[in-house]
Length: 519
Image (cartoon, rainbow, N blue to C red):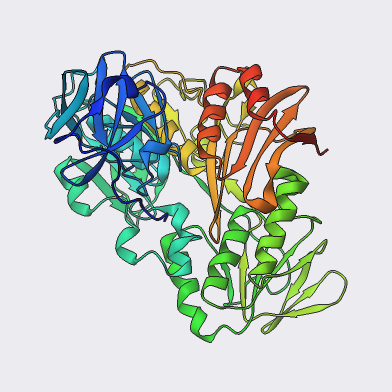
């Protein structure tokens, strides 16, 4: 969680701000009654809204305004400047809006306003919506359906109540986020909105013919529309000793709790895998002063995703915090107090955390006769091969930029797909064509990535990773397809906007200063 700024800027109740100082792109920091706000110009005039993102408190004055919306600089949440609604994940709650007036060329504000209004009736209303999976996509879809005015029954079925999953490997595991921060919503939230949340039971069968789902305890639910958000499950190691009690995977809140419960007796931890989750786990364990060794087959962590410049920086950052690396190796065997590497060497370990990727859960879709191909195949409206069934999140394989089918395993992407699926289930006909976004936290260093370039062939580096001030653009066949950055929040937002409309000139301009190729 980032540190929040104290309110600054002019007091909009007492002194106001000159109207000419308020633009439409860069918000102006101000305050109302001691609370942080921003002033920004929209097509309908100047708006004054709360200045802190409701996700993790990001300062919206450092964000980007566009077309009546403001984008948070930290994790790219989007808010409507008229209603204050959180219309783009990862934020869930609205920001306050304020009464705004102009006198003698100055903008003043009072409030906050109560702008809540009843949503119009949806274009269509299925008799009921059943959502299979209570992760990011499923939870976002259920909330969005209610926000859009859908009034019929919603059933949300999952392994656990929706939780802030990104924090499982970050602040919660590090001990800096308390337990009460982890649930996305309280049980009362779902009760008040008429969302039936079922945990502890799984869907055993889908019958598209009768439009029923059957749970493993025998209960049946009829659906008018079905949304599949089953997510993914950790890829298991197939080596001797992988079933020992001190070997753990991290996917659920209970997984994170279990790892934390072992730490008092942990003398040496091994993390198998140097991807984002593995390295975040390593950072969190080091925050608790647990000795950590990371073992992975690649030579530079994350180089295949972020390039050598950022990969080497991340490795150096972890080494500065005491993490040991055994790169270029795999684990051949896990013993009770050590792991054996492929070269016969051993590393002490009475805690092993495995992070070697995930596998999409597609079994239910296959059994129901839906089209699958490395994921549940959907169109750009997230509809499957069955017209009454949609899919979103980690298990969905959808058309990316240029129509190439992709599957993306990011929290914010899953949330936004859930929101888009909800729109389409009730007839709004919205394409999902947003550039993927994710963030990763390593100690005090956040890394933001927008776009999708799994097979990039050139990395363009602008700035200096060692100074924690860098952007890296990834080209595929001559086109920039994604951008990673450290402490270049505004530029990251601009890159997201440019990627959304394939504005290659804007992307090149963002990366023009101090750039060089690093293939």
